[in-house]
Image (cartoon, each protein chain N blue to C red):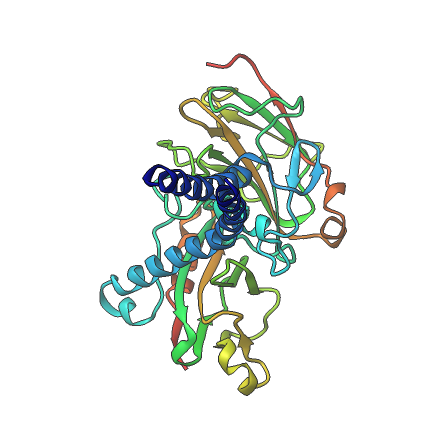
Amino acid sequence: MPRQRLIIASVYIAAFFLGVGSAWLWLTGVGIAGIDAGAWRVNLLAGSQNADAYTRARIALGAVLALDRSETLYYTTQRDDQGEPLRAECRYKVEGSPPPARWWSITAYDQDHFLFPNTERRYSVGTESAQLDSAGRFSLTIGPLPANERDNRAWIPTAGTGGLRLTLRLYNPDPAVQQSPGSLSAPSISLNGNCL
Amino acid sequence: MNRLRIHIAAAAALAIAFHALTVWALPRLIMDRIITLGNGDARGQLGAQASTGVYLPPPTDHTQRRIVMPSPDLLYATCAYDLSDGPLRIRMAASYPSYWSIALYASTTDNFFVVNDRKTSGARIDLRLIGPQAAKSAAPGDVIAPTARGFLLLRLLVNDDSAVRAAAETTRRTLRCERS
């Protein structure tokens, strides 16, 4: 009899871990749904009152206090244009035209969703800091080393090894991209040189 | 043996329930922690700022590790509120010459209200926020929160210019979250 009780208790304990564990794996292991633009993905339900339970939980884990799409579009990626995972120990070139929004920025995050430590306190490039060429395009470097030691203004340093997450924020996006976020001509992301 | 089968079936149903409960509860637990910490931050401030209900975090950098994906382009101010005991009055000078927004979040993490510099006119923001239990007595212009507890986040776009940062600092110090 005690053995049977032990088996029954084990079944219920296993049920608890199976339920909680499967939810955690589903929330953290499965990428967030959304609309793709190049290597980037935007979830239109971030911050929304219409978000389903899974989206709300994923946003809470990775982007809590996001603004509704009427105010901001958040494009994120963990992969380059070739579909390869972004790595903090590698150097990437990110190029494109300024997105159609009142202001925009590209920020590099560690795999834990926080900023990389760096003494220069340089974490993002955007409307306020992007250098545009004669064609009106920007080009920036994200990685442990700048592309050009003499001019590193367009460089977002990373640190350590492991995953790298990029977020492209469009504050007050133009109506066309707000209506059709997949139509964004999103910045390209390509590996530039060898990884450390 | 039949009894064991019944227990296994019940355990499978429980596993599904635990799965659903985890997905449902996670955002609420995370938000509860943000609200609780925000309350402590506001009360822990010294001087005149302590009575405003508003917390002014330091400029965003890599040492900020409380709320995920902080934006380094923004200067923030926060206010954790509870409308169980009555409405909240939110006021701020609206003179900052660049982008700013005040966003309100329910305890479910939903962003149910946002106003920015282009959606407002006049020199001041003056909002009355009321809880769901008092929604029937709302006056025109009142903002109705879907949950009694929640969180306000002020965002001000800044850059490396010290004059811009000073203007943003001046503006966020005018933010008030007080009982109406």
